Amino acid sequence: FGIFAKVNIKKNDIIGLALLSNKQKKIRSYIGRFTNHSNINNAILKELNPGEVFAISTKDIKEGEEILVDYRDHLFE
Image 1 (cartoon, helix red, strand yellow):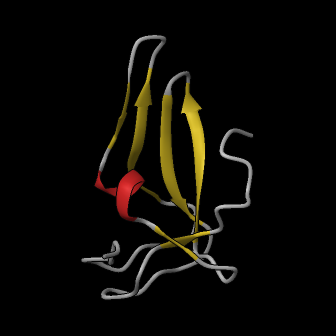
Image 2 (cartoon, rainbow, N blue to C red; image 1 turned 30 degrees about the horizontal axis):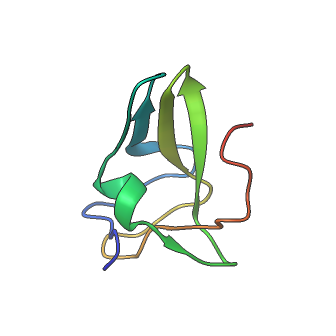
């Protein structure tokens, strides 16, 4: 399992919503559920709005390339 780019993605683009959360519930999207770990990551997970965590590219990602995050990075900066 994994998440793969369907189109070319530029550095700093928002790839998509990974997690919605409030006091009662957390809902993960496919990006939040199936993005794999790598020490050589090309995306981060970052809270852009309260309770909304998005995957954001940290470098250009080519169509067909797997989107990877480093699980050791802090989820909320």
